[in-house]
Image: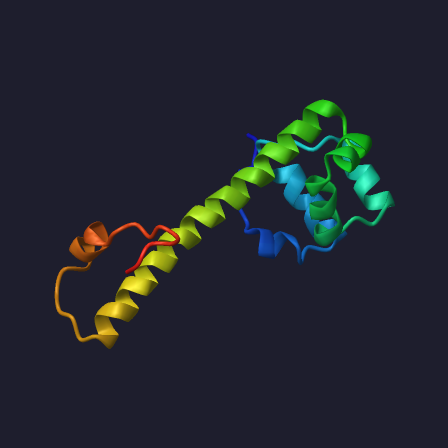
Length: 127
């Protein structure tokens, strides 16, 4: 039985990976399935998490160091982590803002009602 699984660390966690941790993560990731030649390359070049994310952000470097198929999968996978984080942060930020306003102005009501009724901010319009 295959013990590999898809784990989704945050970008902040990946950036702290040393070379060995990065290679282990990429080899265990079900979606990426890093091949031995790519693992060997990362080890030979001592690519850690921070350097790897720089490669992922630069399409020219990504395609230079990885075959096209794995390069596309790597890019898609890491973009999904970034989008997932932004979506989670945006929700958290809105809830934090609502809690702050409700607590500081001593408003007692259902928070979900307030969030639904807040008008959308448009630049250049008065409050």
